[in-house]
Image (cartoon, rainbow, N blue to C red; front, side, top):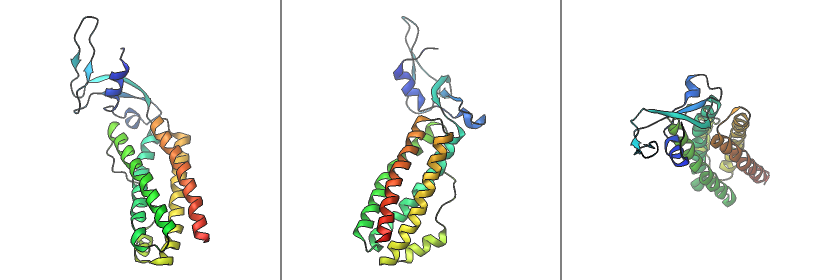
Length: 207
């Protein structure tokens, strides 16, 4: 079955994840028409194209999606959300302009990554809720909420460094076991971006 590039792009976002159901060994995901934008299947020479029916199998994608890819996205989304929750506490509590700027950078970097990973999960037929445990415990979050000034800054930096280090561990695991190019690229971004932020936070923590 031959497809043009435009058709592949149109239908790839409606694919479902075969690898998860089959154990996820980097298998190619079948392309299945969804219920959103119509997918046009070209006809033969001289024939008109037709619109695919929802649920119709259209072939096999070129992308390889594995369980590791899905596990990375499902784990990183709630992990990033906790970082955003922590970063949002900085503006009204921190005594450091540099820390408040850092918190803004964390928000600016991780919010788009959450959106991208959520869209990716929906595209492969998985709900984007995520289910991983949090690095920072509820007791630690409550302490952070209650802290002010220098005490907040020290606790925030200590917890966020550990939080970033856990994200980098997840990213390294994805680079080792993952197969999907989008998730591999995200993992590389996490490693590079959060590595830089850890160095900044350690400098701030030393004063």
